[in-house]
Length: 82
Image (cartoon, rainbow, N blue to C red):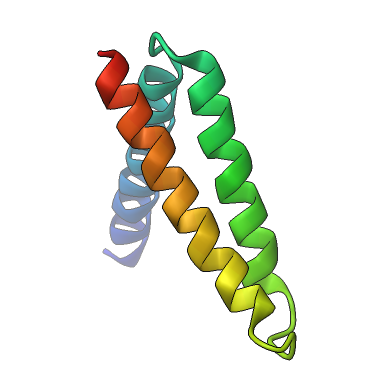
């Protein structure tokens, strides 16, 4: 019984990962590859800032806020082009 539950959990995990990969592939196939690249770079930069130590005089937090704003603007640009 326990093995069956573990197999089902493993199968669900694999399917969820595949669905996520498919969603990324579909998003990457948009008509705005440079804008998509910009969003990916911004998200990567934010991820690095999230992992950085917090004692930066408020500049780290401000940078993350600006990155969020930049992502929003890029998304608006993509929407405007469609």
